[in-house]
Image (cartoon, rainbow, N blue to C red):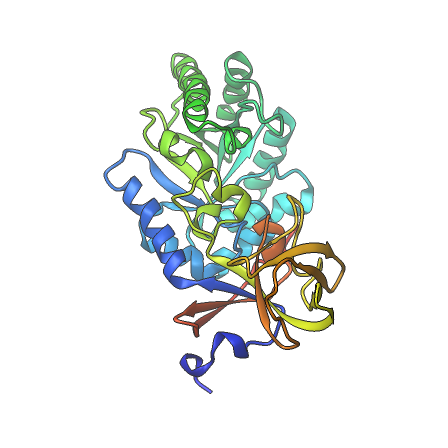
Length: 361
């Protein structure tokens, strides 16, 4: 049967659905914002892990992509993506070797926040005859990885610039802790403060004779600030394409395009129904999923393979009925599935393989 004849309600469940109209609206909204800006959009693919979607984002104007793990980058390189930042410290010998191997064939860059890691990357690159691009990773308050802006960043930049096999490109920041800050005007002010720190650090390093070609920072929650910053050359954003309901509250211009389709398998009473989608296919890291369009149903409990729903109105729900859930956390949800069903007008228009799922190494 051709895809255009498969209806949404005929898909076996649990299954991941993408509303194409909403996804394409999100894609256009972000692409339109960056049109004509000095900063280029760099999309983070850890949300969808799907080469077909990465290609769509690049075709819409993104400069390149980010991956969080070497395994994800290997998948994207195999699919023809040629400009990748692995936005994570790569420190184990096996992963370093794989990263350097990718650098021999495509444009790969990686952040560094300590001299020992830089030394290890340099040795591996020299051993393989490769040149690896690196960024000094700056802690902007998220308290994850990164050196302090200012003198600490300068010291690391000086060390890296003296190493063979590495090419220092600039600085990488991350203001993810601001992504959900409300009100939005306060988020903007705090983001601008942090980006001034990046600009000051850039000038400090350049005053010592070291070029800083790139400043890469940002998230979906701060794209409209980062994208306008005169110092920023690349603004990172990822979840905007598909969006979960937690993030949607803080950037409502992007719609929730991804849902988990489930089937009602039991109706024990007029007040309770059970579906076939549970924790093995929906992440509740940031809260239980929401029922799309309400339907008078509220999530009561999530179990491994089932979700129990409370019927809050007199709506009649029967065995075999389909229910869509909007996840609270997309990264974890998508990683549990093998494919995405692209839906338009209640029919399957395309299917996409989530080739990067499970690539946590």
